[in-house]
Image (cartoon, rainbow, N blue to C red; front, side, top):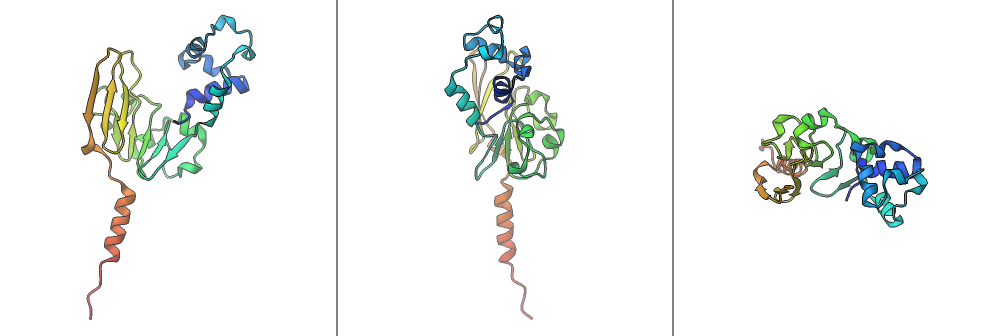
Length: 199
């Protein structure tokens, strides 16, 4: 689980009084309703009673995760900047076309921007995921009939569930970006095994 912009907006609202989360399009009001509050019930932010363990969970969420295969972020990266040196605002908020178009490096999975709004070159169909260079966009939301998407990262098998109850499975292994770190290691090994001819 990663921290995204909506978790951050919730925390900013509760702890800093930032009202951006309560703009209807940002989902805060619907979230409060799920917790049993109506906007008319709230005289000030101190009236909002989200369970402490939920707030502790939201605060514990990391801004990114990295394993041997990939980097996982909510929104994206700055090309050329290591993830551990990237400001958290970028990791949860960015919508940078240089990232979508030009990112090369360790495979990066991201969400935040619906794939329908990403460059066409990386999409194969209306509700498909985005694969371009070394980045993979998974946010297939954005419309009332959009599916919820999940990708098995090792095999690149895409699972999608639509609001109508329809589910789909699509195998995308042939589109999986090559692991450049393994390729560089293999290239270095090949270069070290080349011997020069004797005089």
